[in-house]
Figure 1 (tube, one colour):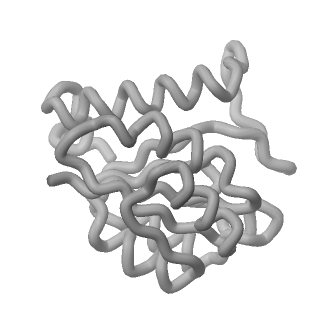
Figure 2 (figure 1 turned 180 degrees about the vertical axis):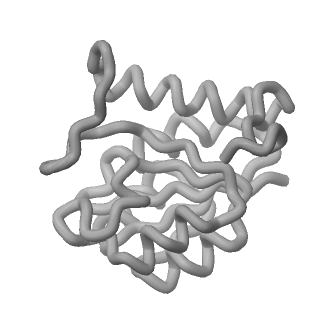
Length: 146
């Protein structure tokens, strides 16, 4: 069984959407970690199997996960209005887990892309990529590119 760690903050809306689209996949355990209890609670309501809150939860769960998914701010210290600490960002970025990061807007960071698809489309793309990886197709970590 693969463990998928969903990390989110603020209200947990993005994480909740990801979880609701992942929960039908067999042989996975979805772990929700929120930067605050409100985000964690909403992700648990969306269908996560387990949940925890805070910096230490990010550190511990990042070590155990096979795949980490969330907004790209989870690897940027002080992002998400300061909810992501340097230690959280380091734990995620140095984890051996494959990271599936969704590009959402952040003040003072500009992601260059030709077009900006709607967030729902980005979530669908992330979930499809996770399904491909779980099915043994298109796993960049097996090719040595993390």
